Image (tube, rainbow, N blue to C red; front, side):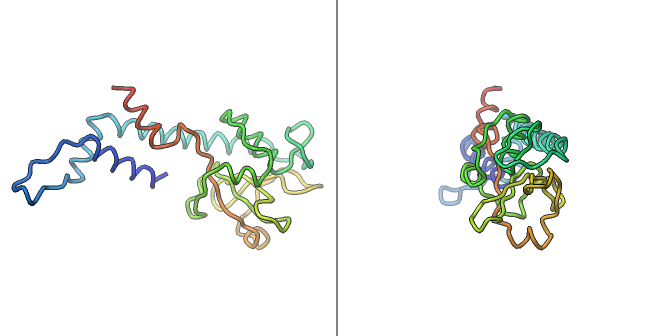
Length: 198
């Protein structure tokens, strides 16, 4: 999230900044960080960006809390509800649909393709983590809950549970991290919302 925040700041500063008075035609002065901050504050963008960031954090917390409510639900191949059980991608899909009203694709590899790739070091609660458990890419998925742990529906005979990504089995099979990005989460959406206020 911090990358797009910086990009948004630069774009807004260049789009809305009045040309600075330059002492000579050959040496224009660049706006300072204070100038950019003041410009963004004057436009109401800082408040709007903070609101969007808070909204994203809140939804991530809701996702994790909702997911934790399904601890102990049995694994069921092809399952996608708590009454009959979940498989890994059915669990992820149900949590996102119930919590944020977003319908993800059904299969783990399709969920990986439909979401934004992020670095493992950038993982935040609510992000998706993928593993190669069937000798094919993105064959297993879970929801990151923070502190190096994720919640998932692991396998037949098991139940929805939280596990540590640093355990040897999961560390060796880690296949990538993804973020579910909605239109509301993008820098353009934040700028559009800010413009709509004024």
